Length: 215
Image (tube, rainbow, N blue to C red; front, side):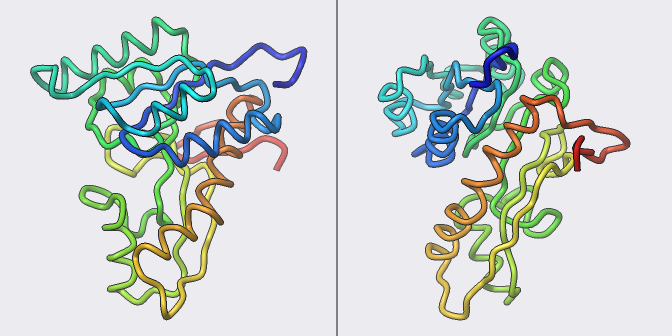
């Protein structure tokens, strides 16, 4: 963490293995998140490996299981309350597959980031997650895919774009090989970079577009 700056408390929300969480943990250890510090990991279900990653790095964690709440509204309120109780400044969705509603967005406006494994506005929106994204890319025969970090809004994958990075699609790619290469070459690079920009106060949102100071 950069000395002399107020710490930016980061919560990472996960539903699975936590590879993007690990990329953020590694970036923080290298001093690449500016004033950012991961102070909470919230999982949408028990037993996911992301919780082990948090434990192994002494990061507080908790499970908010969707099935324990009557509806999306009740779940979203519990999530927003947990984030506020932990004094979170920035929320990062890292493979978080549980639907949340406007309560969370309203309480953390322009303070929620998501990484999507494609170049938005292509191959995004409802139904495009995990391997489904890469399967659709290969079916379409596009030559370039990649990843996008965007600010989360109520409309799925439609929030202002912070960063994008392109990755070439190879003729012999499978959904699995393309997924892995996009993670390694794009997601794990631009997600920590976007977090750093936020923590440095360099992101401004105006007219549904992101402007980055100093560029």
